[in-house]
Image (cartoon, rainbow, N blue to C red):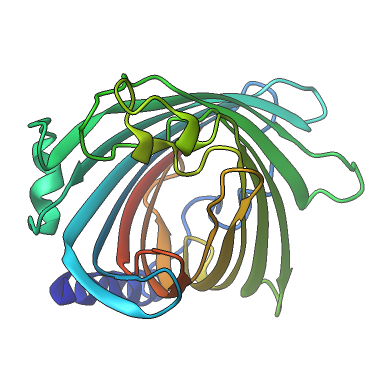
Length: 303
């Protein structure tokens, strides 16, 4: 994993140095189309985002770290949005998620086999989410929110390893960004409010369902994130980020929290296509929270 981290550092440096050596040939959408900015009517935004989380440590019931056999969790999230209002203040979309997980000390890249062996690997399409984006205030164009309802579509497999949460998940994300320093810097903030529906895990029938996938039922997920970006050119950016997240017990008798730090970069390949790479490290946690690393790579098409 150290080699992978070095690769992401090299990518970030490459974004900066390459952009300084090239002339601006196209309009920048890296700076313009932040998550706070909505699409014009008839415009489309398609994002194909891949994330690999791998861990060999987690906390105990408190915040002390303990070693575990390596566990790996791959998530592909595909988001498709389009503008539907003349004033560019309402977008609608659909989100799909595919996951692959492996356990018992397998290497991080084992997830890309997408196996389901019933013992230490599981994969499949897990959720589909209708979604809407809204810019509520015409005089604050850099503030918006996105509300999505994630519907689990995978089947229960008694005794199988964890794949995804079984609860219906309603999530609303609030976005705000501000550009400063003559356009070279930008601060982006995000606050999420997500409610996991469903009965307590302890009330589920152990003979029929995988109780481990119901650990988050009847709880609120609340992550708060901040990104500081620098734009060496209109076609590229590098950023650092921090996130504090809480899983708040609303009746399931289970709660967690963690702190994550990271960095990454984005580059505009063409007028339509952007690429993004990032790295995140969970530096602390509480209540059986994994203390792993996340490696992400995404493509975004705007047209």
